[in-house]
Length: 209
Length: 209
Image (cartoon, rainbow over all chains, first blue to last red; front, side, top):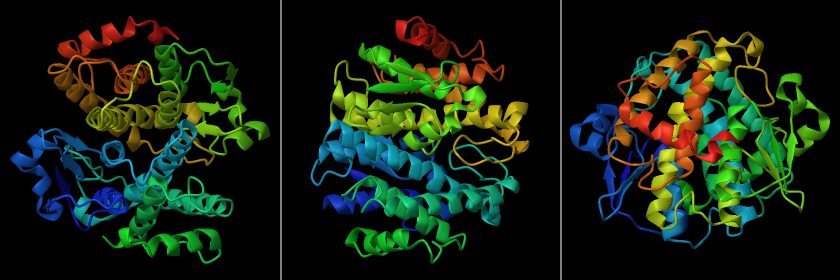
């Protein structure tokens, strides 16, 4: 197995952190997104969406999309469970993970990609070019603030995002907050529950990968 | 268990179709989105995101987000498998499902909600109001056309979206195309592979629920 990664990018870090939590060691192929490495022919053949992360299995199967890479790894390496054991846990964790992706990760991406000059024609990830839409900067930032708010409320009633244990939902939430930092958006000081949780997650070895 | 549904809406139909493919019968609570039923106090308590679908389990647990409802049902009722058996299958299916959601379902939603007068202040689903951004109508429609194109290419090499068997990825793709129909966008006639697949899926009893 190989893991196609890009050190500075938020999306592959979701999987890198998941790999670290599983205690796995997977050979890494670094894709330089800044020089357009995701658009070269060999990589495009592996993943026509021209995105990282990608897991390439030993039989040549390529799995892209962060949550799908995690799903593969969870099934192949069940311990420690990061996506739930019972049906109820699996559903609840998938719900919180999806909420974090929609309200946190995609919102930060919306603001960042529509704001940053280097993404002038690359306002969405993927193979197709789309021009920036300036109104999405403000909307994305507002959505991130709303994400911060509900995350704080949730962490006032739960040790981790999806329940009493650390799961993939914590990874998506944590990386979303790191990504929001690129926009100079930080958890407000009065979001004490989210800040307590954030410090705890940041101190895990997996957060430093 | 109860299933909070809304007959005309695309998102809960993803789960309704999944339930039908599993051969399950789950009592339905209809939420009238057109009169704002998702914002009343009782429903907001069940799902503060004010969206359908929601599965309410017998212990009171509420699971929202279409893919999370499917995940619960897949784990609780494994047959027939719609999200893969082996780790490889599970990863590949999750990848295609997520691509269909991003490029198909969210793209159609982006165009539809930013275009339709009734959604003037409701350009995103969820509890928060966001004003329409007219530029997203054109972008959403372009993304749907791109989705049609890759779907056709994919179905030229595979019987179903994620491989040789019908899976949750076919449901998300199918509902995305139905949703795109609200925008008067249809699979072009020369997309013969996608059209063959679409007719086959449309003829399944689950497509008519």
